Length: 94
Image 1: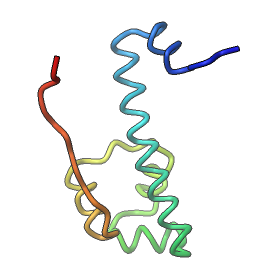
Image 2 (image 1 turned 45 degrees about the vertical axis):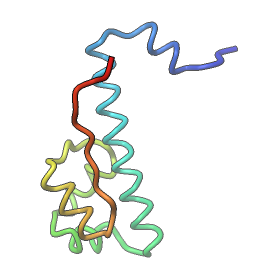
Image 3 (image 1 turned 120 degrees about the vertical axis):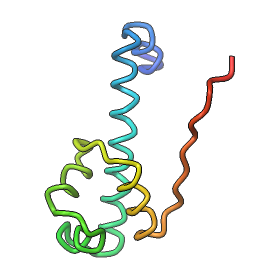
C-alpha cells in the first residue's frame, strides 16, 4: 500500500519536473478558489468574468488551471473578490 504519494513523487522526479508540479499545483488552487467563489455566490462563468473584467475564455482557463496569470491580474482578481493576496518571494533558508 502506498502510504505517501508525495514522497514517491519526490523520490522519482527530477528537479525540473518538481518545478512543473509546483506551478501546476498553484494554478489548480487558483482555479479551485475561483470555482468555489462562483458557486457560493450563484454566479455563472460569464457573470464572474464580467465582474473581473476578463473574458469568459480567460476565466475558463483559470478555473481549469491552464492559464498562468500575471501578478497584476491576480492582484486585480483578489481586490475585486475581496481575497487576501500575499506573495512570499525570498531566498530559501538553509
